[in-house]
Length: 593
Image (cartoon, rainbow, N blue to C red; front, side):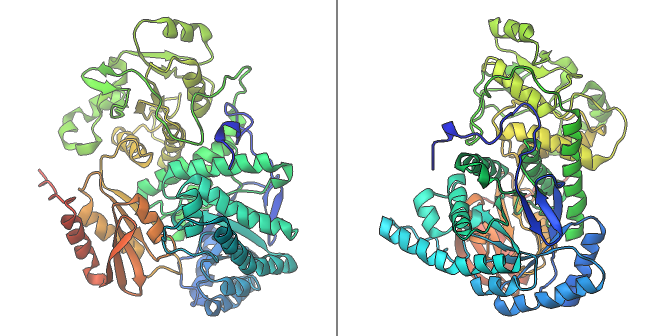
């Protein structure tokens, strides 16, 4: 892989410009090119139950889902895709179907007979995934590549023959041993894994495919997609394949929506992404409004974006996280900047509205009032004001002035590029504070996209949510964005996958049981994964894992190592608590006042 110093994933990081791609046709639905950004989801029903799958697919299509994915674990299960497809078509619905394939090339070969698109995961389609650590000689590496190619070429030829589409979908949690040992568990490894498969497809003149680079950690996911697009750009104009966006194992509720908005929304804001899937640990139908709202938010941005006449080089490396270096300030007894905890601001009116119950807000208390704090607000296009700041003898907390006619992501990038790095920066979700009640979901997604994107690039030393008028909700959103972006861990962190036909237990109920038992363990990260497809790999980012190993049987993990096997589901949450205690991470929940 070439040095990231020579790579560019966007021609202009201060202005919205959708990436130009070729078109991938999935049945009658075009992805990329001039087509709108497509919204898709995945069935949670068992693929062996054709009636349930047909019913769920029709419900998804009715609320705006444009592409429906369904798992095909084995060749025998893949045969049932014919009945699912026939049932959907008999109901007068032409929504395209995608078969989700892991581990089984023969299942893929069967599935593409009946569906418009196949998704293959390069990490486990033919490669080994046993977490083996070894030094590969060039000959050994080439031998495994040759075997992988031998397994993959028949599917490429079948897709070409039947006019099917393909998604080459890399997951951070399931890179092969070969890739892991040569490239590491990194965005570089994810990109190389996908490019291997793409080179094979191209060698056989098959181009009806697109890419994805999914991870449960938004920082990893953002870096991987940027790196992929940068490498596609470097490879040449004919490598302009569309991109499928998604944060895998995002979770549920506000946390799942915020994590999805940080990952998906920030990439859409930079013009990357031609189809999106929001992965929530909820019924699939709840994913569609979130995905549609994210897409609508970006389209609204494009209409109102302002082009900058002169744009300096950005101040950060978009392919590697590093928090912006600043001086540390003390603002009304709260530290800010130079590695300090990122504080949460609020307005005087919101503080006053909550004053009677500040002691009951727990971890969601406001810490600073913006009107009562020494903050310098500037328009980042005002070079004279910025020069005055840079000439000043002391560091100051700086923010973008309300009313500035720039998109917040672009405005803060510009501010960070021009401002002396010793000055800490206060992030705002919008430059138009809201004083009237408005729909919560768009406010949530806007705040998570705008502030989360910047935090994942190391920009931001304090935050304030201005677009949500409800005082308590604006504070909760602020803290949850900091948690999802990984810059302030103040509660238990969960990695929870969405349900699908592979899931071996009720994910929604189980996730809630685990939350009830462990929700007070600040700083502990727990993964709740329905099957072993991504489970062991995603454990690498978690302290403990709860993974479906067999029907009604659970395996428990410490890191990415399975330590307890085949635990009956009814005992598994209690055994997880015991495991956390064994490793010294348990403490009792505080008694409620």
